[in-house]
Image (cartoon, rainbow, N blue to C red):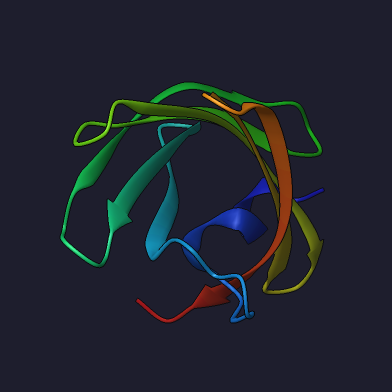
Length: 107
């Protein structure tokens, strides 16, 4: 897959379970992916680490400072302007894996 098709600003598609208003902006600098995550409800910037492009999907980890929440992410393009976004995390109720549909939006 052409990795440049992931470049842009991404939001979760509207659905009745939408919990987060985090927007991810993906860019490529000097041949390497960069991800910026912003909670649009309050402007909090997520800490991004462990970026890895495997030729099919972009994987990264996030840390949300206000709550100490950690998550693992896998974003994979399914067609132009649309991607699946798998989020995995652990909380007091156990391990969770959520599959979401995301869309590329204008900046």
